[in-house]
Image (cartoon, rainbow, N blue to C red; front, side, top):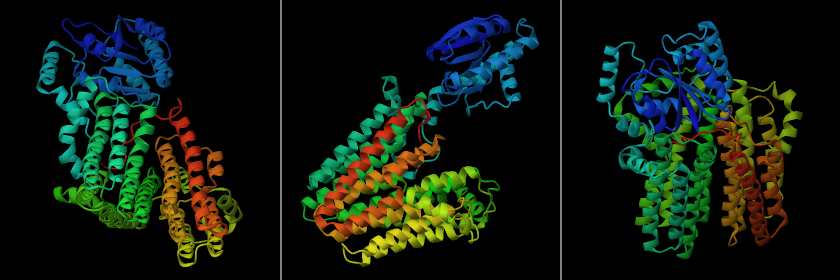
Length: 601
């Protein structure tokens, strides 16, 4: 239960008490600042508490946005301020200071607004939600009250709430083909007490059923899979809209939303590959290639964003041109579509699954994702080269965490720290790229079971250490993590393909999926300001260079069939370790209460 303390002179006919109760608040009334302070002290520390002016006039959704969002310790709108346990001390101090200054006399003006002023004076971070056309005011006289009430009547509270449930930046397919009705599904779910987590789980189950239908290998199964994949995407949009509509953000929801999209998409790739195999067509290499490409695309996005998250002097001619293009209506949609976001991507996959074959579906997916990756990466490289910015220690730390360096790379980094300082600024991405290309090409151009991939993997560990030997603050250092991801995943793909036995590529698919989950988990921890995974986890998994070397050694020492078994065992072991640690973290009290927006839908 939350508690709201009404302060100030009550207004006959006001609906504020009923509005607060409808939002789950227990309402108490204070005659003056001294009584308000006393009531505040009586509220259990673990509960949310709000100070609201009794003269408040506004929409219920304005109160909801200002007083019930779980993501912010302190939040305020005109005439109301609220604190969760994390912000309670700051609110109590501000109240004590205000009471001392006013002597506890009868309230004059809005106590909530004066408390907010005191919090700002302390430098306390107070969230102020964007209200748009919603009304939130404390009228000073009857005429102003009547004008405020008329303003409330002129704006449809529910229509604003529904509109704000949809992400401000979505893809063309989602904006025009999904959101016009999925927002009403979200409202239907809210009115029946369903939670975003339940809808997220329903989306996952629907996608898994779609993958199972694709795995049948029949035309009817492919058609059903395409339809169910679109249904899963509708639910995927609905869960986020429901979270925004009802402000139901949670730690568990953050974990589910962050990971289930990838689980759904990659499970569907596996279903398509199994269905193709039933028809005599082996497309596991294409399925694994699609997963590698898509994951590396995401790492490019994550690394670039983290590198520039808090960089100073955020200016470049390329960025200015991009902003100018975004001011022209049609170019906005074209640019959003050609990067093949999740909405367009899943729609393409669904239609091609139903109408063509898995091989054609994967060819189209690979071509589309490759073009999108080239377009976005080239634009970001140009921005980075023309941008005058000093990247921060936080950005360098995030990139180092995303690199996922294990004991070998860290050892080489420590040994090479001094000579690395004398190398040019572009050294880190250059050596990461060259080392990665060396191990992938060596694995591809030599016979399965030879020693050369081991030599290349050792060289890769050395170059990886050199790449992270100094802070990643260079203009293009954000390319280091995606280059390392491509090297590790590409090596696994190539060696499994060279094994040329049944089961090798599916086993490699499972291993890459498990490792990719670990990398996505790292990203979302950083996004939530919760830090990187614990050091023991990175060490136990060997880091990217340790896993690459291990796979090369297994390929050299084992027969093709034994290699397949070893890959399967390694995939299971990695999946168990990362899943257990991830679940422990995301359901713990220390995890951030957010609902990830993910890539544009």
